[in-house]
Amino acid sequence: MINIGSFRAKDCHGLTRRSFIGLASAAPFASAGTASAADYGAARAKSVIMVWLWGGPSQLDTFDPKPRAPSEYRGPFQPIATKTVGAQFSELLPRLASRSDLFTIIRSSTSSSNHSMATLTGYPGTPNGESEPNFGSIISRHKKSATLPSFISVAPTTTLTHGFDSTRNPGYGGGRLGSAANPFIVHCDSFGKVKMPSLQLMGGMTPERFANRRTLLTQLDGTRRSLDAMSAGDQWNKQVADAHSLLTASGASRAFELDREKEEVRDSYGHTTFGQSLLLARRLAEAGVPYIQVNWSIGVDGLEEGSNMGWDTHRNCFGQLMDYHGPVLDRGLSALLDDLKQRGLLESTLVVAMGEMGRTPTINKTGGRDHWGTSSTFWAGGGVEGGRVVGATDAKGGSPITRPVTALMAGTTIAELMGLSSELRARMKILEGGKVIDELF
Image 1 (cartoon, rainbow, N blue to C red):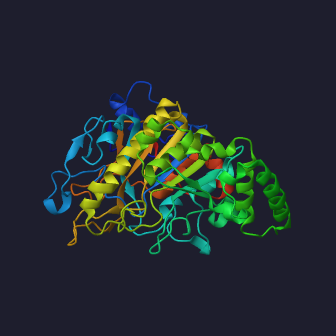
Image 2 (image 1 turned 45 degrees about the vertical axis):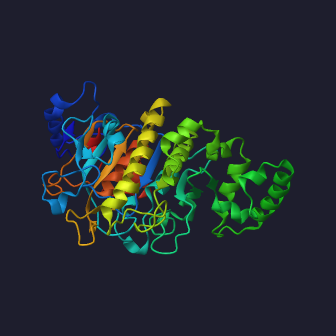
Image 3 (image 1 turned 30 degrees about the horizontal axis):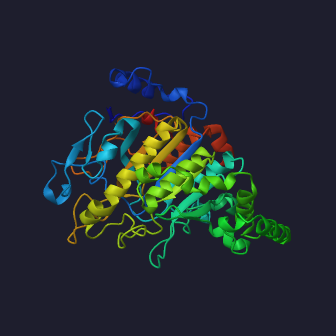
């Protein structure tokens, strides 16, 4: 169902009169039994998988093609039909097109059209000189995991020596909530090999060395003494403690062992860094981690083939999209949806995929697209109604012609679905002024 209305609601606990009228008028197009946003008072999601497509994916070449636009706008890719009546995607995404009944696309998402991580915090800049916390940091303060860190950020193993670093920029972690709300960072490669940088703080330990029981006992004694000696202000304290707990809690580290999966499952995700990272995210959600952020790349630049190639495609945009970005994204996200659904986890796991911005409708002189503030974002599971397209852009894919959906609204919706009500958000003084994207329900 395509939904280009402008429903407004303060949060999921109630609708304004205007929202009610809007929903009522759309009723003939909704499926039977569809709940309104007013029904979502309690937590609908147990975990969030945030797929961070840093660099800014092109909306025209993914989820918002404009086949009738002039050639200098539309690009070379053809639109294809989807399971959502009236909606078309780029031919780069055939697997997702055949599964569009499982997710909703927002075509009217807006941002600052610059490289920042504000899309992950809801706020541009650093108000009062303090960076706002990542959505994952907010969720981790609200909901704890029994044995694993509550906010885990999965990033590629990389040799990147230029550009930004998505694990070290304002917005990646706790911000004004403090370093204790930072994510526990793990690295995953195309072979499914997982590394934990925090283990380097424990004398260079690895999960394999912990398998030796004698080494385990000796190392734990030394680590425990080291932890006791650390001051409360030591910036490594939390990360070391998390690593220590993870490797000593019964069965906790098994979630990181991708070789426990059947080979056909691993194959379905694709043997790429992104694909195996998504598989790891599914395992972490299944193990009860409240918030997992999967980073497509460490940096933004679309310059290096493989896991270092971000979505900042100023040059040779279409070649990169056809050879790498499109197939890898299509296969990985489709496999994640299938896997979650087959395991009965899709309804309790919210999956969001987005970048910090979109790309220009016009194609530049070097065959690429530049920075742009309008983008498409992907929402599935966790109480989100599938088979919809929310919002619309103009004929050239440049600007929303319906209500813009901001990053603050995205963060507020994530928080609400995880049970962080407007009252709780007010007490925490986070996501202030944010509204739920009620068109998702």
